[in-house]
Every structure is written in C-alpha cells, then in structure tokens.
Length: 191
Image 1 (cartoon, one colour):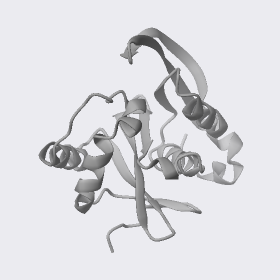
Image 2: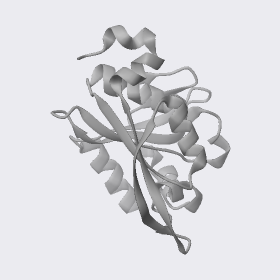
Image 3: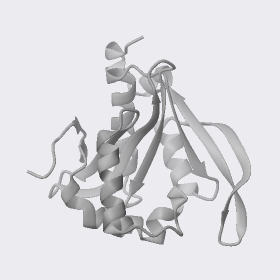
Image 4: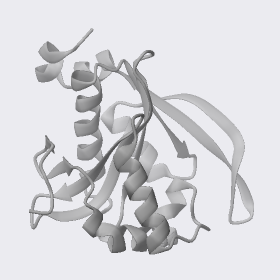
C-alpha cells in the first residue's frame, strides 16, 4: 500500500508523504494554477529540488506534513501541513493545496483542514492555528471561514503578482472555537 491512513476522514484521509509521488508533486509545483495561491507562481522546480524538499519535510521537527488522499481509488490529491510549530506557545501555521483543478471546489480541502485541526488541537494540544491567504483568493477565504477561521490581520499590498500588488490576509482559529463547531471532539481537548 502506498499510503497509510494516519488521520481518517469520510471521503479523504491524511497519510505520511510518499516519496514515490515525487513526479506528481514536481508537476504540481510547476503548475502556475496550483502554485499561484502558494505565492510560488514563477518558481521552477526540478525533480531533484522537489526530492530534497520532500526529504526535508519528512525530517522536520517543527513541521508535520501529510498527503491528502482520496479514499476512492486511494488517489493523492494534495498536501497539508502544520508549519512553524511552536509547542511552548501552543501554536502553528497551516498550509494546504489541492493539486488538480478537477479536485478543487468539492470540499476536500475543508475536510482535510478539519482533520488537521483536530490533530493540532486534540493530539498536539495546540491552542491556536493560523494561515495566510492572498486577498484575491476568494474561494479559499470562503472555505477557511466555513471551517471556522476568522480574519485577524492584513498585510497591505505585500504580494506582487501579475503586475499588481495584493494584500495578504492572516486568519486564525482557536481550539475552543474549533471544538464549539465539533462538540463530539471536545471531551478529548488537552488544556
């Protein structure tokens, strides 16, 4: 089996990243449609660079990286991670992408985000998880709000793309807010 069901969801599950997926990750990281929301639209990644990145992610002590795998067919559809993990402050940042356009807009990202937040708050005992999103990414902002993230900051004209400056929004969610929306999990909260 290529993937291991580390965090189980209804339609998807989160698995450790599989290095055999290197060509697919490399294709995604070279696709402007995929990388635009990551702020890497103009980057070029070779197989060797992506392999180094995947190996570095697997070794990281301050990050937790997962493959997003669709149950139907056990197909890799994206990635999600907790970054800048600060156990003392009980906080982290989240990053997510869905690789193929055909898989976007189907709620897989929201399901993956809820799974990762459950892991962050209930297993790791974090108090706060934040993310950054470009102000022009209305679809992502709407999805983050549905999961329970709230806008908490804005860096004005901090990103230059396609000949214009764009704002970067910061959003966050606290453990008690996540648990208010997911009460069945509240008995497992580590305070």
